[in-house]
Image (tube, rainbow, N blue to C red; front, side):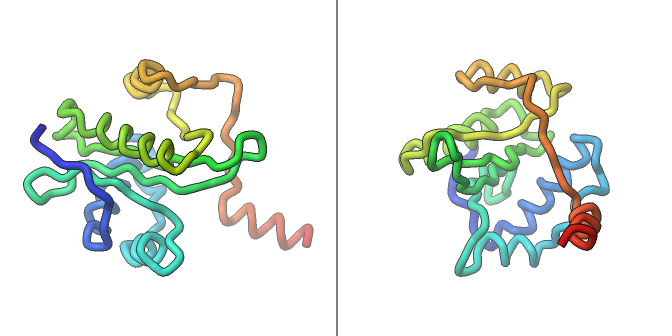
Length: 160
């Protein structure tokens, strides 16, 4: 294995942001990333972090990231949400993605979580197949719902 997996650190914020942007391009949403490096630092490494990361590092360069956070399921209890799992295009196939995925699952298991959840695009068949091969259930019947900032503001202005 030519890389290591470790917890992400504040010094990794720019590399993590670069991977987030690369993921947005891959997911055909190149202009969707609104966060800044300052947002990542504040939200990831302040006194009350909003997320955790594992990074894959090869020769002192970040080649992949798993960004996740704790949540609560009313049915199951403690859970983890895997927000993003990304390996830079030139380094795919080395096993870094699986190693990052494994690190998140191990973290959840050790914390006594009852579930790890995430979304995957239906056209990303290699990811869907990988997740299924690890024992994950990929639900076709569930729909992801988002309320963007503009609609949130409009709703609250009209209803509160």
